[in-house]
Every structure is written in C-alpha cells, then in structure tokens.
Length: 228
Image 1 (cartoon, helix red, strand yellow):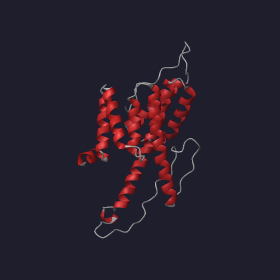
Image 2 (cartoon, rainbow, N blue to C red):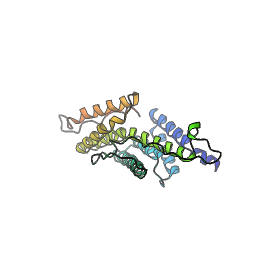
Image 3 (cartoon, one colour):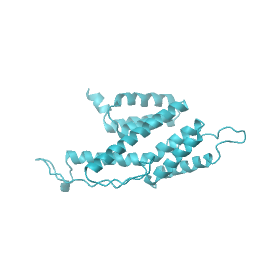
Image 4 (cartoon, rainbow, N blue to C red):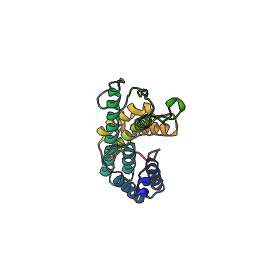
C-alpha cells in the first residue's frame, strides 16, 4: 500500500511522465505509450488534475492513429477547461473579479489570481509572516500554481489539436484551433519552451496558408513538436 501511495504522489507522477516522455523522444513510442497508459489507469478519472491534463497531452503524441491522437488531445483540453472553470468559480465565490472573455477562448484571457485570504493559524501552526503557511493556505497556493501551469499549457493544447486536424484533412478546424493557440500564447514565458511553441504556431500557420499542394493533396502535417 505504501509503495502504491508513493508511486501516486504528485512528484512521483511527474517523474514517471518525464521518464515516459524521454522514452518517446528516444524512439520507443510503444513503451512510452504503455507506461503513460498504465499511469492514466492508476490515476483514475474521479478528479480532474493538472496531472490528468499533462498525461493526456503526452499520451496523444504516442498514438499511431491520428484519430486516437485527436481523442487524447481533446481529453487534455477538456480537463484544462474544467480546471479553469473551477478556478473561476472559486474566484467569484471569494469575491475576486473574473474578466469576461470571448466565446470559444475562455482560457485566453484571465484576471490576475486573487490574493490570499487572511487566515488565523491553529495552535502549533506557523503564521504566514513566519514563512510557513497553514494547510489551507498551502493548498490554495498549490491550486494557483496548477492554474498558472494550465494557462501556460493552453497554446500547446490548441496547437496539437490544429496539427491533428491537419493530419485528418480538416483545415478549417485546424485554423480555428490555431487561432486559439495564438490567442493563448500571451501566457507563454520568453524562455526556450515559449519560443519553441510560438515558432511552431508560426510554422503551422504558414502551412495552412495553402492547405492543398499542386496535386490537390492535403499539405503535410507539421514536424515534431519543439517541446516533445
């Protein structure tokens, strides 16, 4: 029991996802898919977490069938949307304003995260001033970090979906997802990951300027994702 709990801990989950991703990068797609699928089963689907979103995101990349890849990418996006709706509902309940956003881009613009509410410390707990937040406050900080991570993942989620639709010969759907990726790209940092995603968005946009080649065949799908 203790071993299973340890394997299901947040740090252990991220470690196992990272190990599977490295296998995929090394060319062992099948083993990576098997490991990620096993982890998905272990996590269960009772709750939506950042791990579910990340796991589905990477599981999509290991699929051989473009339709299966699309299904996993849609799962990842659905989890992200539910996490953001939960965040907005909590913010509204706490009295923080949530900016309205255009339909279809609910994630693309978000109000700043609400400030921590002042909480009294139970006997034996350290106060925030002492640098040790209480259990409830620590959970809130953890949730906000997860929200920030999901917000930064949205451009990749939509970019992957756009690439899926290109592979499936659905250029209009691909353009719609690419527009959402561009709208969400403001959440990306100016680091190697952010630059890589922005560059991939631009490359796919160029491909979609003409969705058919001289022979009338669909344009080729984009290459390997810079973050994969």
